[in-house]
Length: 252
Image 1 (cartoon, rainbow, N blue to C red):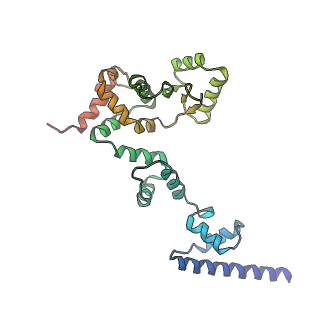
Image 2: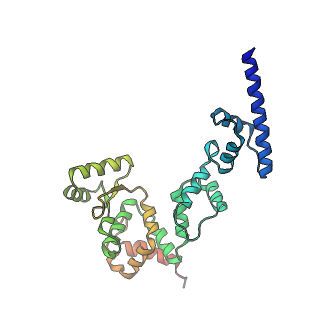
Image 3: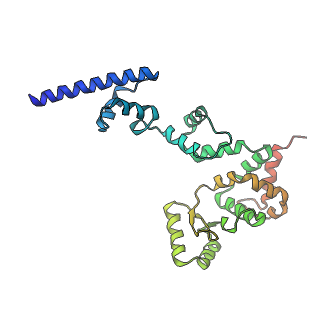
C-alpha cells in the first residue's frame, strides 16, 4: 500500500512539474519541450526544480545541449572583425554539418580578393605533401616567421634524418608518439621557443589562413617558386599559381 502511495505521489509531482514547465515557457514566449524531453530530464536525476530546468533549457545546457551550440561556441571563440551571425551558422550547418575547420576555411577564403582566391583554390588542389613543401619554401624565402615554423614530414627520409640529428632521443620518440596519436605524418617542432612538438592535421587550413602573406611573397619573388616540382607539375609558379591567376584576369 505504501509503495502504491509513493508511486501516486511521484506521478503527481511529475504532472505538476510538467505543467509548471509549460507555464514557465509560455511566460518566456518560447515553445515548451516535448514530454519525452521532460521525462529524460527527470530520468537523468536533475531533480524537478523548474528554475533549474528553465535555465538549462534556455541556455541549451545539460541534456538540451545541441551540436549547433558546441559549433557556435567554437566558432565565436575565434577573433572576428565581422563575426558570423547565428542564422549564417544555422544555414551552413544545415547543409554542411558541424565541421568548424571547414566553416572557418570558407569564411577566410571569402575575405580574399579575386586574384588571391583564384590562386588559392588552384593551389589547394595539390596534395598535403606538396602544400607542406610550398609552406616550408615560404617560411625560408620570406623570413616572415621563425624557422621553427617549418612543418616536418615524418614519411620523408630527409626530414626524419634532420630530426634524428637535431632532436634528443626522447624528443624524437615524442614526435612519433604525437603523430601516431593524431594520425598524421606532419608535425611542427618549436625548437626556438619552448621545444613543443605539435601534430598538424589540417595542412590546407594552414595554407588558407596564411594565404595573404604567401600570395604576396610569391608575387614579389615569383622565380623563387618557379622550380618547385609538385605532384604532376614540374613548375608550381607557371603550372599552378599562374594558371589560377589566369582564371581571375579579365578575358581579352
